[in-house]
Amino acid sequence: GVSPVSPIHVYTQREVYGTVGSQVTLSCSFWSSEWISEDISITWHFQAEGSRDSISIFHYAKGQPYIDDVGSFKERMEWVGNPRRKDGSIVIHSLEPTDNGTFTCDVKNPP
Image (cartoon, rainbow, N blue to C red; front, side, top):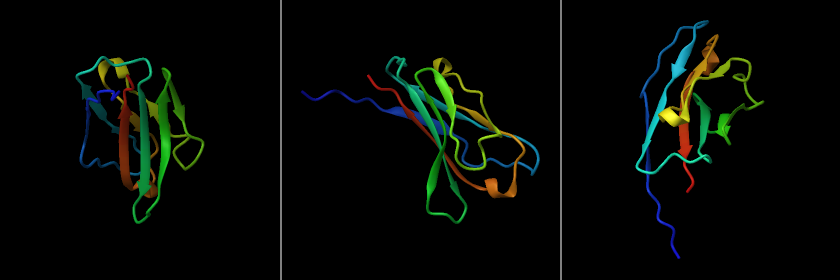
């Protein structure tokens, strides 16, 4: 049989500006017609400006936030989301010029 799939709509700010040394909130809200399951997962990726590669910098799964041990964000990232409120936001502290790039929020809500 084919399992029905219903989309999750994810909303983020198109552009976020911050000054070096300050902090910035990367907001990610989502909407699904389905109940938010215990297995919901949220992953943030970062692609540095001028780079082709995107790295995973944050993952939320099984009710726990995991800050990935790679990249320059690991000591500076804070989970401020709440999946029950359909929020997958993170904060990046002590901004550096190399933080410039594209951040992507990916939400999965398995049945």
